[in-house]
Amino acid sequence: MAKKKRKIKFIPINQIEKIGSSEQVKSKIKNIEQNSLESINKTETKIIESSNKSEKKKVIKDEKEDFSICIICTENVLLYAVGKCDHPICYKCSLRLRLLYGTKECPYCKTELDNIIFTKNGKSHYEDYNLSDFLYTNKEKKFSYETEEIKKIVESMEKYLCPEEKCSFIGSNWLNLMNHTKEVHNKFLCDICISKKKVFPYEQKLFTKEELFEHNNIGDFDNKSFKGHPQCGFCSKRFYDNDDLIDHCKKNYEECQVCKQLNKPNQYFVNYKTLSKHFNEEHYVCSHPECLEKKYIVFASDIDLKAHNVNDLNIYIIILYLI
Image (cartoon, rainbow, N blue to C red; front, side, top):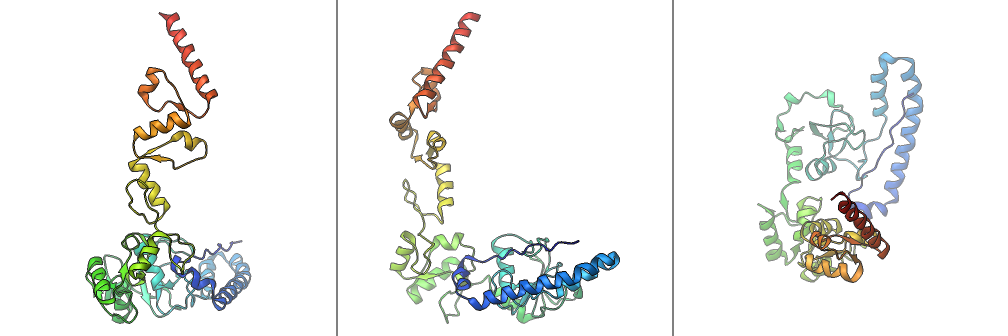
């Protein structure tokens, strides 16, 4: 008997608070899940009875799913993005997955979707269309648009639209948009966020000078989970998150591997000179000339150092014996 795959609901970061406060959306999602389970129980026995019609029955099961609400952002879908697996999602989430996260997988069934059709008809099937019949396409991205209006809507997502409400300015690039927001609105974009945050230009947040300072140092008042962009203690450069900061430190500074063994990771030093000082103050350094030359023969405890010295002494005795 075929088993129903467990749905995974993907929620963009910038919509978490909005979704969390919407009981109506939660209720709709619960109803969708209940309806889905009922449809599976009714159709699974029919699929077993006739293997020749199994593919047709699976299509019927999918038709009973309610795709009027996007399974990722849980918003009502006004414009659908459909692939060969016939699991439509809203066009914004489809573009976000493909253009910002670099994945072509269907979030529902994980099928790789090379071509996407953008349509307002959520009940149509991918196989109902002939890609060669579309007048409006993007061959590079393998997008097909049902109408010219839909094409304009989809393409506007990538444009450098001003995030300020009621402002229709479209920049030619990030620098042009940043100059516009500064000169016209006296507001600023976070240069770290525009390079790393997985949102489209119009979704970026604008800050006053004071708000931008707080954003970088302590976070945003309307997002308690964000604590600001961490700063490197050596070069003072800020990074999008702690993972980016750690990557920077690994590439540019010396990490104490002994501390790491003692469950004290991410202990970095600006150069070997400061790391060596740390070795002598906090750990146990082998004083043999050969070990000092190797630089990193350091131990977490006196017992480990003595064991190392005994082992080296045994090797020395064996060498003398062989000579």
